[in-house]
Image (tube, one colour):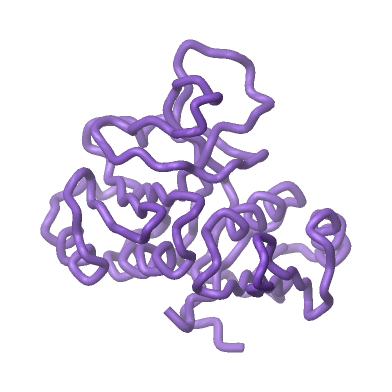
Length: 229
């Protein structure tokens, strides 16, 4: 496998801004575009994502792109990023709808890499085990855009023609309920745990983020294979 264009996802998870979870819709970060974010169990807070100068790229359920609140084409996104001043320590936050095609998320990550961000953060819902608070900060998965040298565990998400993708770990098909155990077993004894994820481009983003989330639960970093995007 060629790993030169893998994007490392050090699974540090995400949720968004506070309004009742029962709405089923995540509210806007500062001024932004509202999307339905993926659910996670291992999210980490990123309160900086709610600052006025935070860089946020939104990918809607239909694969439309926004840089801040400005609609852009995938091809134009990189140019908009290059023309916009930013702090040297600024992060890039990607707010992808859980139903967005994985191919669209991959395009946004490519733009982040081309713009020489060290990391990007994928935003998602707040974990349900959090205590009630008046203000809920954004949560996310931090994405390291360089690939560490380590022997990876390969996870493949394949279009099954149904709502649930087919799942393989190191070429062995497993049930989704077995994923955490399979990753824990495969990474046992490894000093650096790395999960490489391959996903069909027409799949939605949600199951990809689910694999990232489960990988984090076993202490593994995660990388997305973007060779075909």
